[in-house]
Amino acid sequence: MIYKPCLVTAEACGNHCGKFDLALEMIKTAKLCSADFVKFQKRVPEESVPKEWHNKPHPVPHYAFGKTYLEHRKALEFSLEQHKKLFNYCQEVGIKYSCSTWDITSAREIISLNPEYIKVPSAANIFYPMLDILFNEYKGDIHISLGMITKDEKKELFSYLNRHLDRVVVYWAVTEYPVPFERLFLLEIENLKKVFPRVGYSGHNLGISVDVLTYCLGTEHIERHFTLDRTFPTSDSSASLEPEGLRKLCRDLKAAYKALNYKNIEMTDIEQEQRKKLKVNYV
Image 1 (spheres, one colour):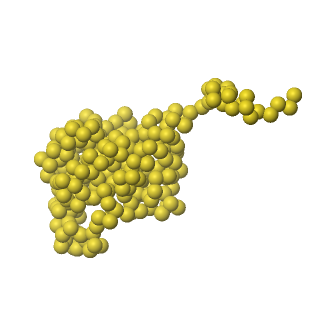
Image 2 (spheres, one colour):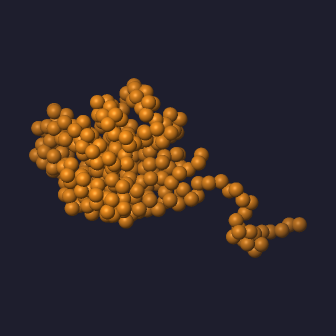
């Protein structure tokens, strides 16, 4: 296997708590940690939240930003104008912007920004009206997570994506926050590599060793939820990396890239010197 440098996306998700200044700070911090992308989410809650959840409370009150789940989702949303400012600030500090879209209106709004890629979250991976819009009205790459999907749905989705292999990155993902290690099922990455030229990993695991392992299995993009402080009252915090964790992940992936090659020389220069000093000669 020939390895390429792994691209790391810091997924801001709802960890900005709906505070625009906090989102800007997350962008700057992700850049300092050496991430390649910082990714936000765009929803029109009235479109993307199932109607039966509009007037229900958040299932975990500690994480609620509103009295109802619809109000909660609205409180965490940024407008298109705010996303434009996030996009521009990413360019200013030298990190790339991306965004997940959850509904048709949001897809068209983010298409207007023309980021390098647009992400389809697991919750929308079989929402074909939105997929059609993304593939027909947008020219960049589409990254799509494969959580929360049945075998039959996955078969249908793969058939659909087969027409767009040059534009697709599929992400192995298990949609639990956090995911126990025994339910990560990472060998599925090998199966995805047989079908798709580019495969990523959307990690909701604890720590960073698993992410490096997925890179060794062939992932080219790794996305991790990112927060400035895991004590923030968001549902993503427990599966998110704080800045030091993100920095170490980026560092370790760069080290893995340097290490994953074949030895095409007999000995290194330093090894030859060590041989002179240490090699036992029985002749």
